[in-house]
Length: 136
Length: 158
Image (tube, rainbow over all chains, first blue to last red; front, side, top):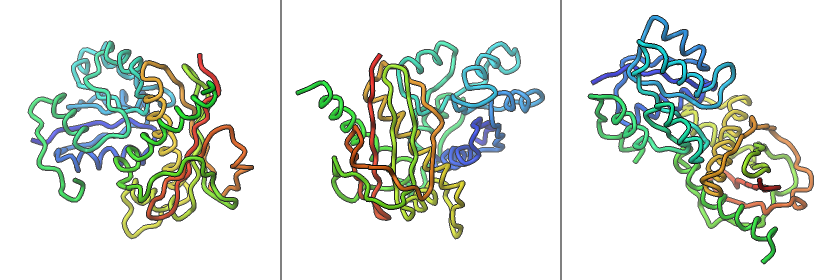
């Protein structure tokens, strides 16, 4: 089943890497919206929605934590699962984001399988095909 | 063993664990031989990237790479086929590598700690000043397209 996702990261190259990793992980996307920071993400979601949001933590203008806070007070978007992807692997950061209601926290580095498992757990009905053999 | 020696060994140990994991997972690169601790980069121009951090500990992580390796890392990370990475592509990828290595090393060093990482400072074809005179042990990782040198300086704890 295809799903709509949003990737929020200030680096276009990292957005492209994450998108590629979702595909390698065996998940089918219908649409992939991209935003450079939390504010851009909220603007894109004003008249739209997605099945899951993958966001960086450290970004200019509006960071990942502020984005999650804004989503959680929006009646229409509050239930959209959010997965934070970051290099910060300290427990303090993970607990702080869990308390905001994020569905997952993925530390870099990560494998396509880990990302796929986390997405499948967060998005009802999303199942991964077998991962491309060349990446095993 | 002095506190300083213990700190150096701790920094080397977390780098030895973090570097292969990041390279294999995110760059599809494997390390050809055992890493060499205490092996500074040679003199001459190298691409470098540095990330400073503060919080539960203060210091910085720095990496140095010959141009051949920087290009292959950028090609792998950006999935470039039949296309050479631009200078800005290489700068971004080396900065991202330094960022991931720093986050991964610090998470191993102090899992309960709290850190703020700076934006990576990356320079292409730069001559390092006195690489053998640093306060940390450089570690040399051998990859197919050249050696990657990584150092982690831990200056102070909270």
